[in-house]
Image (cartoon, rainbow, N blue to C red; front, top):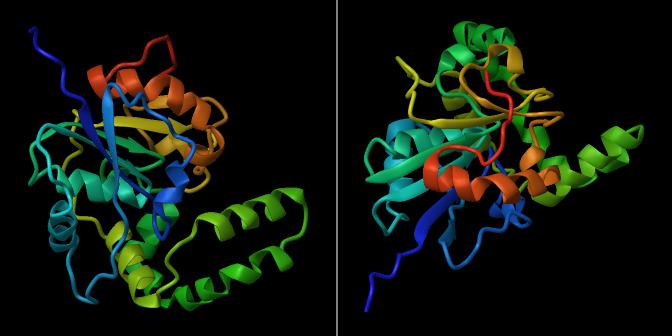
Length: 232
């Protein structure tokens, strides 16, 4: 009998406060990939990003894995990759180091302004759509209601703090970075060495899932895309 190729184990980490349901329409061929979804846990108030990432790594039960993280989840998988045996790290709508943060976030980090954000308001997510005016805001509010899974204030305070104060000396040039040119959270002008999704927003993992279904398989296996797509 010839050697049978083993499927690649792919672990997905959702964005800040989101559940794994954001990946519900992302489909990878079962013959080539075993998909695993990670979920956020409530951190200790003083838990460091490294400590939290080490805790999350305990849910990984394979070697030579591919880690895929969205937004803040992209930061987590980059930290996890430092203590796991990984084949590849792919981040979506995220940053590779703190120099890719927009100026307003850098300002909030330096001044500590993030400490006064009213994170407790997220507990009212079920009512967002009642106060949203216009079709765009109503659609966005509906998406938040559908995909936000954690409204715990301790988690949100911790996540915002760790996102803005991430201690990253140098970006890992082996990380595959996928970014939308219409990302409103991490503007494209601050992003370097990324595969650009035209008209992709910060939530493109949800509303541009067809792009990911077409391109992720090859990106996972080779780190490259199957057709010419703009990179910066």
